[in-house]
Length: 292
Ligand code: COA
Ligand code: MG
Image (tube, protein in one colour):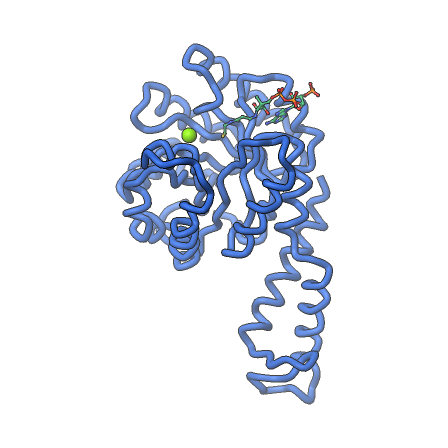
């Protein structure tokens, strides 16, 4: 598997693969990731056509440096096997499987992927949107080291429905923290759920800030109007980059050679901050290099 840690995933835009206008439009949008949806956004009678359109789009080579992901139908549907087979052969960077319940689901899916072609450089992304998946988070995340699982994607529309809860963001705060901890414990990337009201930029901004502050890498989106906000909030700020560069420079200074803790800009700074600073700079460089 290629290293996916510093691939920018600030803005991950879903689009119904059955919508040719959206497929066309996505080639011009500054989203880091495009998610071709075969699941919730596609009606049952349009599933086969959506799969064909998604595969053709993925093979077109017209989406520049954007990361390309196919969200297939869940394991309990009649479309699952064919969706997964075609996704594996499609040049997608990742396949996103909804309604994951257990670690065994990940094993079955990745076994199936190996059977298609074990040499394929395609990641598995898992939707965390079912109560069972929340209970099983550590076991699911632990498979990241042995399997091609790289990324969790939260799905709060489905989780609210399954919980019989009101879709009120505040109720998901504990789950967001739990999921980030499970993801980070095993080196997974993690993306926030969607914000349905795409005509409310202030609400979107609030959700992006909440997610960024608990450690999410980016947010999944449903409309082009949401991309700019997510790109801005999930990118390291100019201030953070300046601070990171100052930390890297200070640790390189010969007077600090061999020290674990030094003073930078009046603050105690340790080797763990140097590691963080290097990550910030690597992400900023990856964002600058992507330029879509
Ligand atoms: N990806 C790419 N392009 C999109 C898009 C998306 N998610 N959503 C809208 N667009 C395009 C439209 O095709 C339109 O393009 P045009 O200028 O070529 O006509 C333009 O952006 C403006 O769209 P707008 O008229 O504001 O929205 P709409 O009424 O056409 O669509 C939704 C609204 C919600 C139906 C649509 O945004 C959508 O399908 N979103 C994704 C839903 C989804 O994938 N859900 C599953 C995950 S939760
Ligand atoms: Mg769903």
